[in-house]
Length: 126
Image 1 (cartoon, one colour):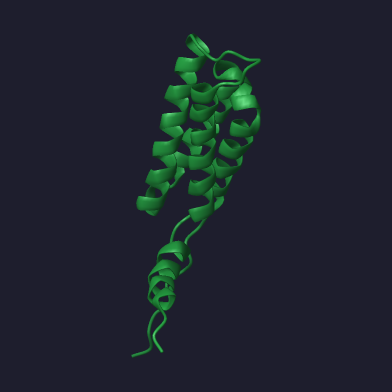
Image 2 (tube, rainbow, N blue to C red):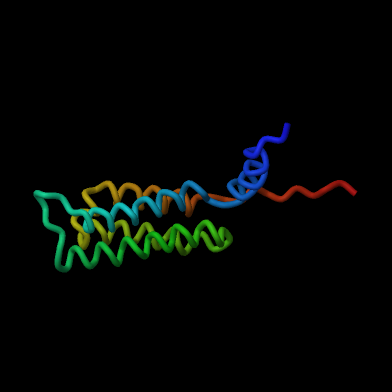
């Protein structure tokens, strides 16, 4: 019996194992958190003006760096360092880094991405 998930899994695992998946995911979640916090807002904290605009800019840059990490894992250092720098900037510019949750997601995603190394390629025996 052919299970449909076995073909999905056979395609997913090689893709997942050859790139810093968790770092990119955390960067995307941190960027989305910065954007969604200002978009929805909280009833007690209005997020508009300079803080709202900078949160949208920082969040979109972090989303792009997370997606770039997935699609071009060889160039993982630039998006990782960019996410680390943007997480620090978000503390000042975007309402304490999206209420600290965005900061924590971005900083950990950037650190994981910078620290990730690809598995060494094994040579096939002749």
